[in-house]
Image (cartoon, rainbow, N blue to C red):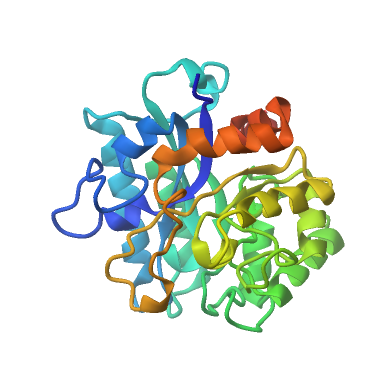
Length: 326
């Protein structure tokens, strides 16, 4: 029997901003509905993403409206709420929750911060709930430094942390520079901010050295604060030469004390127009769509046991969501 799956991160919404796209096109993206059904994904977190560019907030707003329309349409998706926590595995359809990948999705570099927060509130109203917010993506923006930068936390980033105090919206560390990650943790501690922390789609740098992967001390702090760390299936972050390295990332997470933190954050996105051809294929064939969750779970069960695999597959994520929504 297939285990129910919660996945913390996919880019279906930004894919659907393209012309002539469909949630059912399994040839185009690994998180298409047929794959989610095949993998028994019962809750999919959908990122609202925007790069650092002029009017980036318009791209974010467009994705929130796509999310809203998906909930209204006659399809296999429904907006996941607190009332679904107990029954999610028995629902024939797929729950969906929104998240924000980069503050640029609600606040571009030129508008006032008040305008940006107004846009954020508009997005939250449209989608119902936002599970987490990443301050940055790869590049530096007004809030801080992304993975491929060295900038830390900026003043606007501090204001965003203040805004998130007691909002039950997690801060996502998957696209922070190391400096930004340390600065966020220090600011939260110094100012006694009540905010959950996660890394929605990140692996471990001590297993494979890549800026997108977490240093052990950051991972341990997320674990210490009862956050989540979602296993990323992108080959460049697993280990481009070694499919078995996904297991090694699980081993590392457990060794750091993350039995109750490890979950899935596969990071399926549209790859066909990506300019970096050196990364092709973007995923190992064993991980290249959400339909592979059952065989992945079977491997994990052999290596880590039934209880730990159940936690990774869905229970850790569900427990986290229930805790911050209580």
